[in-house]
Image (cartoon, rainbow, N blue to C red; front, side, top):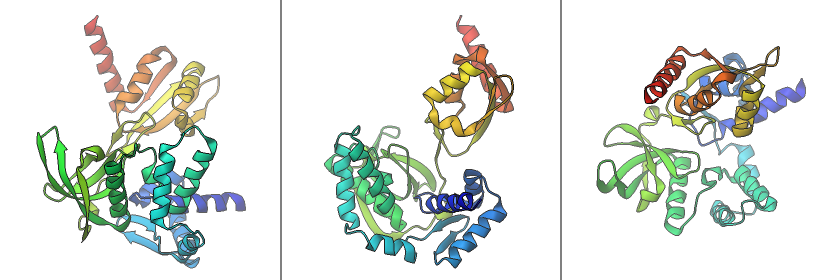
Length: 300
């Protein structure tokens, strides 16, 4: 039991130091703990000397906590040096085990995972570095001459960047001019200027989630499926991260209960193995599948 409790504390510590905005509800769902236990762990962190930040409704552990400062001081690299090393490693052989281990160590110590898998070129690398600093320091930036094919414009954008999306080629920002959360592509930024202007609209920031099928959105959509052995094995082979959402049932079936950001990805999986899957929920997902089947019938 002690080991289980320690493991939960460490996982929660890692979650609270990520460059994401998590509410208490988000954290409890990800950790599988109750609100009561969550507040108990927060009190434990405070007693241990950690600085708990509550920028309502979001929680995090401050990087200025004594423990983190001691850990940083024990390593000889500055953050700029660590960032330069991380970018060099991104150019190295990604299959090399030593390269992978070095990346993991740098990410753990310096929180550089926001740069993972970026195709670094000189200007793009500089843009990512500036955005990385802005997210860490809660500062605004100007995206110089941002090129938007949708509006057919190329102009400056004043934004509050707060979240890199998977692959880190896109960044989630709050745009002051429109009062909207938007996703901007790093390669379309001619330059990123870091300003001495802090965030003013953090409460309006909306996190972009990404599901196991690599679809992104601002909200989660629940799905429940019953899989036979074939569907179960194919799902694990193609989407190994789905394993945490699968529960074995009797008679050789498995129950999949998960949230997705779009019905498109999981819908393709269901339609491709329709005889091997029973759709249990949600009602909206059942309607989506029926609509897709009707479209397929019309095409025949």
